[in-house]
Length: 289
Image (cartoon, rainbow, N blue to C red; front, side):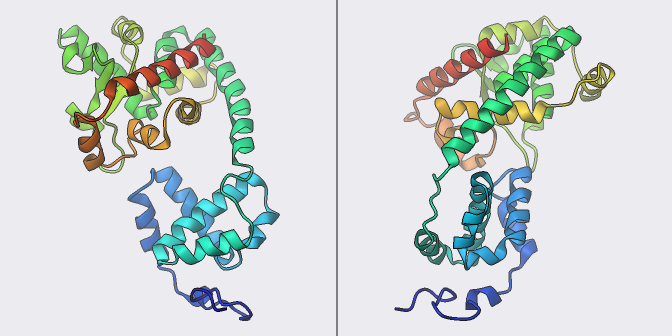
């Protein structure tokens, strides 16, 4: 029985292996649908483990965490090459499973990151009390570092001008970033963030901050810059309450068309989404206290 082209049994060298990959085009393809950091990770793994696209059984030789990354990279590459069905067939034949080890991997990562991040947050609050509100906000919002700074300062500015309602919808508990152009960057954007009113109120009473002021404050106190970890931790923790698509939506990895379709659609249960996010935020806040 002959399989899909490039996966014929008995051939000394799979034909698909001789297919030329336009790696720059593949990188561009990834950047259109993933965050830059994730896209570049997938790109590097795909280039390094390209040969396993044609003999995926060897992926078993790696740790479970690495298996997951290799499979994610090669899955994207197979789609780019138009060979996804052949890849899926080869993966099944090799006895590989997407969920094999993934739950254990995530649990271990949560345990490790959670303890480290909680310790870091408490260290920051103790050593630099003027950053306590900002660090809490960043941990609870899941925003990128720069987005968190911009949102934090905008809350203060709009509140001082008596116009906070133009940014923060208290009824929906949502910060409407999409109304302000600097949140709509070319490659990185964020549309909305659910946030408890108490946190927003704390920000209105706090001092303004800049990227370098935050970094210098932490450096002077011998503390690491770990805001990326806060964002990753938020996304990982929120899997208890949200779907992957909802997490992508809230962290700005959805396209503008998806945002318009869902956020402004009367069929979207925005209150249900809000309630689930706020439950997650409340739990995270309790751990960081």
